[in-house]
Length: 189
Image (cartoon, rainbow, N blue to C red; front, side, top):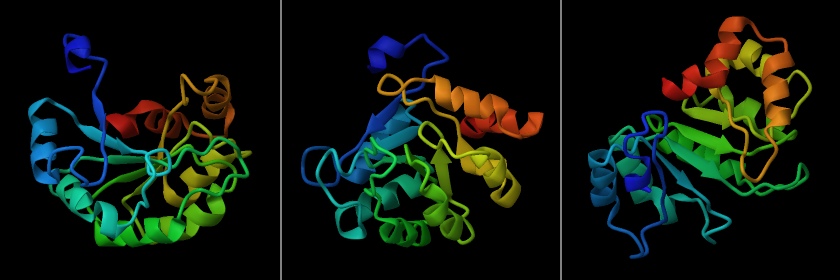
């Protein structure tokens, strides 16, 4: 992948990481290698890769990412709006324990406000990627209550159609400034 995207300034590598079980380098070494290769973000799939996203399993990895200022996309593999796969109590705990590490929850749907709103009032390091967040006036509600900087635009391609998140971004009651921030500036931040 690193060779394939070399020379394409619009493409940025994001490595998928696993907990420290010997399958990958030790967290400090892994993060140093990421930095050396220009990788500016990481992603984890706790449910798909069959581990609990908790301090005991990923604490050393989270500490290394926080120290290096590498944002972490956390994808619990939600494929239906009624799925309840995210352990929000653990998200609360890790956001508290690693306050300088940006945690971006990926693919959460219409039930997100009930969990995220209380956490957003306590954790400025918690964000939401918008690919599956199809809440009526959901983006503008978040922007009004917590700031547009909490949202990172995503489509979910190739697994999801890009139309719904694009429509939401375009037609929700956002200012031009908020739309620009969510649409890309927050991610480039």
